Length: 147
Image (cartoon, rainbow, N blue to C red; front, side):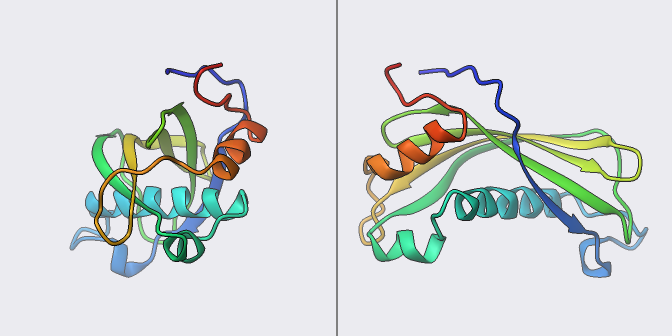
């Protein structure tokens, strides 16, 4: 089910630290994936679901696939806005669309798409996304599957 939504994406802000950069002072490419992972985690927290709580309920979210497109570099001390928006909600998976933007000029630095699977903590087998989490996504602007 591919959902169309006009809701504003969730935004998480962060700063580029020395440890995020390479020898040239530019953010090392894999760190954009970390920034986007943190935004997805903070989005869940914003909806009222901490990863630790979900793990205690036999639920983990694992990245099934990722795609990133790098458009411009971030540098040491840049303040970044990292968005996370669910674009597809299935029985046991979510599809996110994300951007990393530099705050001072609103330049898009990186775009990503991620498919995240919902699995059981012990077996890592797929499991349905709980109704309460589906409802939280609905309130944030995404209709549940089947609508």
